[in-house]
Length: 414
Image 1 (spheres, one colour):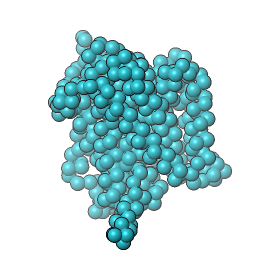
Image 2 (cartoon, rainbow, N blue to C red):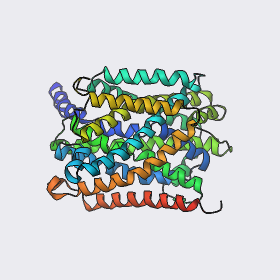
Image 3 (spheres, helix red, strand yellow):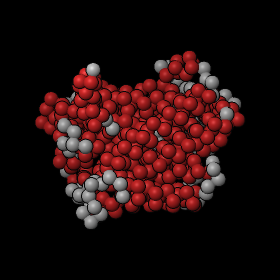
Image 4 (tube, rainbow, N blue to C red):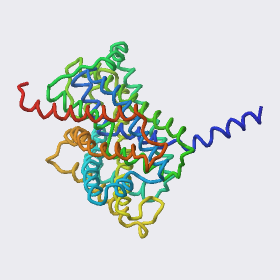
């Protein structure tokens, strides 16, 4: 019996060592901007946007799998491959796109921290500076492995949204049915929410993060199957949680015609309808997600950009060894925080509209990912299958058509 246990444990431990990139990358998609977007989607449009989650689950799984596969097959990050294949000019263009998208996302994380702590009457002028210091020292003073364990632990906290949804007593049949029943509208508010849902699920930074992560963990081609399972599970759990956030807000706020300004308002509004405990859980989940994202997105930003231009990058280097990496990390934190502290920028606009911008900025990145992942010379037997290419093309078309429809809707009477 003991030998059997050791044998099974011997098979499980290597798999556990590989797990992490897909789950963490997927979990951070449910960051402050994501929670705010799903809350607004549920409160404003009920269950009618759940069908988007069904589609983006496949899109997220496939795009993340492509990144993991390219990292395993080449041992290089996406930024390095773009530089080698397309040259420094296209690399600079993509890095500018990524920086704009990521600064918006980082600002959204700090806006989420401010929103969550305002529930407990803590001013953003106190919470933001303290959270910047906390994130900076957490990242710079800890090791990569410790951060990975912390991020995996924090991922478990998203289960609070499932509890909040069940406490709201929804019609589960209607909710599940809405997943496979598309409900499209040319209403401009509906369209921008649709694009925001896509942009908060499939993010520009996530495409770079997953590939850099598997490279940084020194995974190899032999790890493809367990890493693919890790990515697919992470993508599923991401939208699984998103489903419950939308449902919780739809069956409480939407049916009572309660509008919200941000995710904090969703937490407060839930209390009289689903119970104070549900509201507190919702708020604590927002705080957890915001801190999670505020640590991970700036690290990913500095990692990718310094890698793209050949500088030393990574938490395993000291400040003296990688000043560009740590300098860009600090810069990202400060700019993101200052955008939130600025009195002329409402938290909702930061949280919500940055996600819509993410979707539009994702389009050129998907073009490069598609070309690279079909390169015979680069990947040999690890190129995309026909099915994967179809899903990537459908994802691109969905984002492009939604963006065009949003533009057209601006000139239509509402």
